[in-house]
Length: 376
Image 1 (spheres, rainbow, N blue to C red):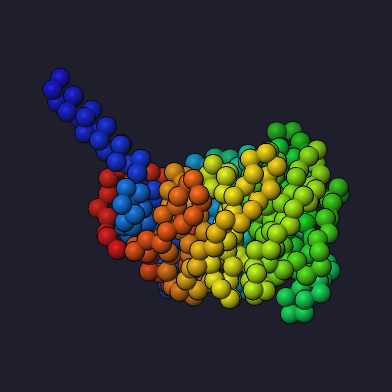
Image 2: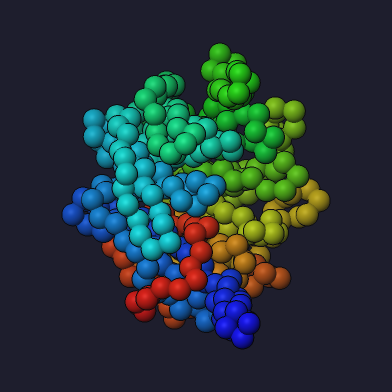
């Protein structure tokens, strides 16, 4: 009985400690000879970071999505159209392993998985298209039978909008529509999802295109409370707030995010409580614009600006809301910030992750109870 009691006490202590341990995944540009996917443990009690696992053999895994179980990672390989595709990576409690590669020959830069975990959709920047890859229900592998939808047109900014450049895939909160942002044509491509047997399929014949201000360059979109969406425009450096009702998006606010006109706005993320919005700017005055979100209207007002290292391409906030991580590609590091929930403001930590050309950072649901970490 004493041994059982001791075991319960020790297990309770380990689980309590694990609540403050957050697993972080970071990917970077690089060749198959480089280590382009790494995981770390962030100790939220003191902000210290520990090396955890790593994976080489990947080429330019510039964006990835983690399955709802936290065990499978889908990462795009952003390179020329003939060699590009999607990696399937298995994650256990202590290692990362590539288990498959599905060629899609379209130059993807983004991937998203539908809420039912039945199919993945890639945004193909180079080809100006969107591809659907079906997920096997038992092993989470990508199946044959890819479908693609290509777009035509262009925007007014020469060199950056000479053709369609699909950049992001988003799902409406009611799971009735999928939205593709098209940086090249200044449009949102919106598709309804229809039930077919046990599946919900994209119905391309009823596509709706939403035109934006010419020269906007829509990049990424995130969803907040009360059916509000927040879209960051890379070229115009603005954020558009949308209201979604009954299959229709209505713009209700547009604010300038990039006050220097550098034409390099990047990532956009909401805090876990939905009360703060963060958007990155690159190329000049690199940093993170900080906004408070009105709980009733969903509109935003700027409350601060946090300078960062060069080219802040990706940001994430831990589920606790206590920390933000920022992947600064040209600074070759991931910066760590303490976040203050009441104000939304950030304080730079002395800790940071040194890594060549990091481009995507996310929190993973795989929790750590015990491991022989390497302090960095």
